[in-house]
Image 1: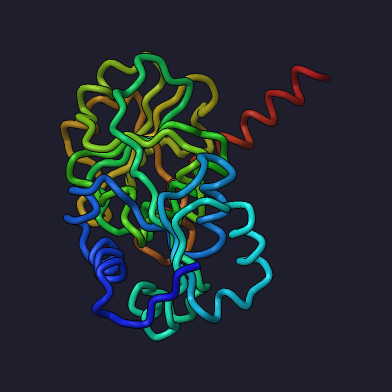
Image 2: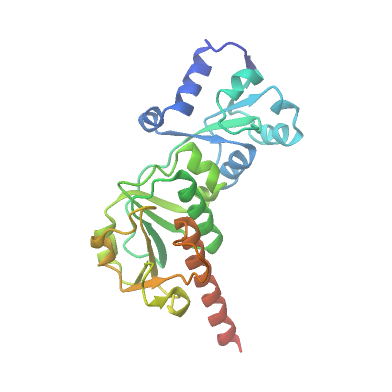
Length: 266
């Protein structure tokens, strides 16, 4: 593998530009995966990255060497540790990053069994956490409004821990139009709603609507909902983080589906 030790190296400069610039990533149609878990998940669910960079210390790790063995033929370089630290924003870099093609935008399917609609989410950590929860709860379709954070940014990718590759993610969606046309049940979370999510049937065809961290759902999108449901909070907190609220709703759906399955089998 080729070794790079100078920050003036054109290959390193191009890689660093991709890491640091969302504009450059969008222009090139590329995303950067930071960490062995993400790279391994991409290989398992999607295929081979376009390029890999490994730190000198990373080359000493058996799991990274084993992963590189499975990715033979991919353009790969070894970076001096000081250079690699300029590519990784985590406190303790795992020693490997990969450049992959960002999935091209796809039209939202006319029929979806269940989906999550996210309006103007701004925090990458929140989005990543919601994506991870959706994958865990078996809800594959995630729709993002035009004002939401980019789903394939490095921070969202790290927070989602490989969930991207198990989901169908749609960005820049006109949520009001899609929600209006959705033929299943549309449930919005609302703090002062009289009906709780635990009293709401979340089985069957379902769209869960979540809004911006500060402003919540817009009145326009809220009006498309069939049901507004609250999450009971007996404690003293004023509200739940949107990622936590999504987790409560998604796993209440899992619980209800499991309960229905038990009833059918009994």
